Image 1 (cartoon, protein in one colour):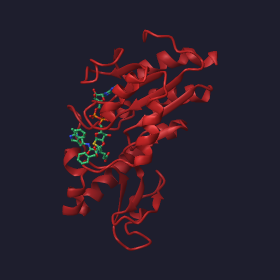
Image 2 (tube, rainbow, N blue to C red):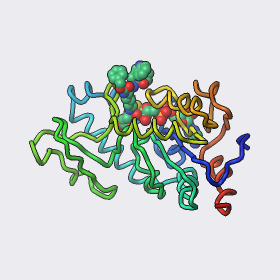
Image 3 (cartoon, rainbow, N blue to C red):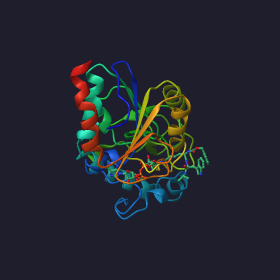
Image 4 (cartoon, rainbow, N blue to C red):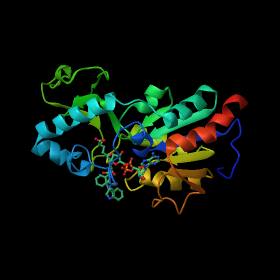
Length: 243
Ligand code: BJW
């Protein structure tokens, strides 16, 4: 199906984007359904938007958090977690902030763009506050316990730098992986958009799974067109008994 056989000792890396969570009911960012509550995410997920109207941005995140908390991992998240559970060397590098890989049971995860269930001080105090999916919106803390400034989502907005330790962890893995599966990403947001090239240059076999072609389709070794929740179980489930 993917053109190269996965062996038991292969290192398998997943680079996931919003499309992997679409079948869970989490909206994607771009494309026809790529609107969040009528807002263009690229206009609200910026430090400028937060500086201009923090209330609006925080309300938008509260709404999204509630929507995401009501969603569950789907067959794609589960197939990846099951492969790791079966003893394969699997690392997930995700652009998603929805926590669904962790809820599915994946353990080795690099969250490139942060996590919507974490908060940090908008003034730069170092502590990160984790909130549970069940926390009602009215109980989500608003002010930094150390300095009193507003808390903001622990998310990387446009124009902000990713955390260097996350980028290093991703680069290190991409340089040392046998397979890279690029799943459900439009492949336009950097630096993640360049990760396929890094892995390929380092010798990985790169497979894209998406419902449509993307700018990355030309560089990958194989593109599988279809839903992640249908394709990934077909690739990974036959491997489960083989470890
Ligand atoms: C399915 C499916 C199913 C649907 N099965 N598939 C040139 C070079 C380098 C950088 C830049 C540059 N020009 C501009 C930049 C900066 C910018 C950038 O890349 N912009 C591009 C748009 C051009 N990058 C940044 O700002 C990053 N920081 C940075 O580069 O720092 C250095 C720097 C600083 C200052 C200036 C310049 C550089 C930070 C990026 C942070 C991205 N943050 C967001 C918002 C998070 C907020 C939040 O969630 O609240 O992260 S943007 C948004 O896009 C979100 C996503 O993680 C990210 C990627 O989107 P993704 O996952 O690909 O989703 P979609 O919706 O685009 O695609 C879904 C796909 O799924 C589609 O292809 C569907 O077909 C598919 N699909 N159903 C399989 N069932």
